[in-house]
Image: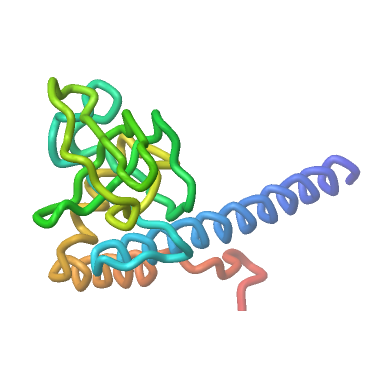
Length: 171
């Protein structure tokens, strides 16, 4: 009898832990989804944007298809990795010199400096690198794939087994 009570308590604790982990995972996925959607529309969410590295100019530090999390900040220093807009595209390089309002950057794998830019061209500073999540960024950058992701989500929810009790006590 005592063993049965202990087993039921352990199962109850495991179920609580599963529920808490499920809620945390759903929140993290939702935040990830929102940041990706905003980034795909060239908007920031709480000052955050996600960019995908498209070239090898920052290798070996940043590899092609790495995802980086950029945060809008006011202060930059030499050594910071920043993303800026240079009239044609977004570029992510390291700051190598700051001279009042002029900032000079260079890719770690490049032999030459970039032309100087002003602070207003900088989107933000890299605060985190996601090495393995590049596929999700690709999906979210294409609005046509949003419908596919929605359908997959619905299928997963519908296919989840219900937790109705089975056996002789089932109603």
